[in-house]
Length: 373
Image (cartoon, rainbow, N blue to C red; front, top):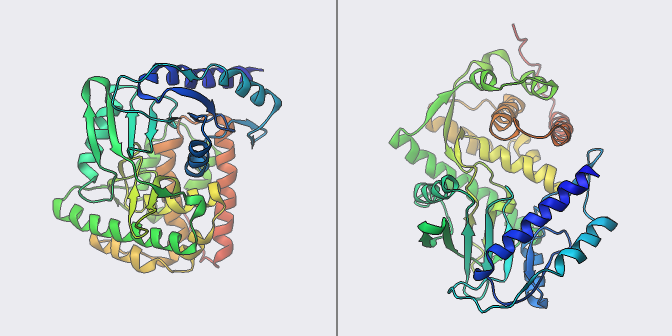
């Protein structure tokens, strides 16, 4: 019952936010999508388009013994209840007329989509997040393909981005994925060259990250035990990078398939130089069951990219220690993302980590790790 009440309150918060922002929405009748994640104009074309675009990476509704579910009698009943309230009568007084209301993953920020004028209005819940978004845009847009910001509404903590009509990742084929992976490596190697010239990087050992973690548990022990003693004390470069780069945050332009955009930079920050490479492999494996990228990594298909990246900072990529680099990444991710994760979800992540690393080990007869002193 407690989870049901929490779920109801989350959906009510979405409805309240929708009504608060109705001046930016086209008048008419609206409804939730089937997963009760976003709200769209009750129009066949809008429903089809939004489903194609947002069907991937939707938040999990609940957890039952570590397993997710998306449809129950109660959630269907809630959909009927909430959909009765979603009607906008007025004619909007603003120039922006969106038809899809999408809450952010943090439950606070929202995106409103105007497909006709190719614009996205993003409303931020607090000034700090708003200022970071603008700062990240200024910092990363010279180096990465980022959707252009066409207006900044300082007083309302809003921005308007140019919308790109993109090919949803659920429709990508092997060519698309290979193109995206190569584009990630290419863009980052060019970026790292500039970072080296600017001197805008720091050195951090995995041992230092371990020391910053407030509470130790079996999950962390498993990660820690997967890193040899000498690598724990080896400094690795940290640079400002995306922090959540995977297929849900990468757009392929529908009209020009050789153009991609990296979106949602809210988790950007100083992280290990290989963080986004491994983050892509991890997310594709656990969220989309695509293990081809981690398999290619273990098979050595990306060794030249990693060697080049390491060499730019005066380091050496040791191909025989690929599993250890992964565990260093997980240590970094734990500090960055998982220290405040609720126990049930953390348990699920731990199980996914174990399966992921078991698969990694199965791909290669890894050499014995040097014994930790």
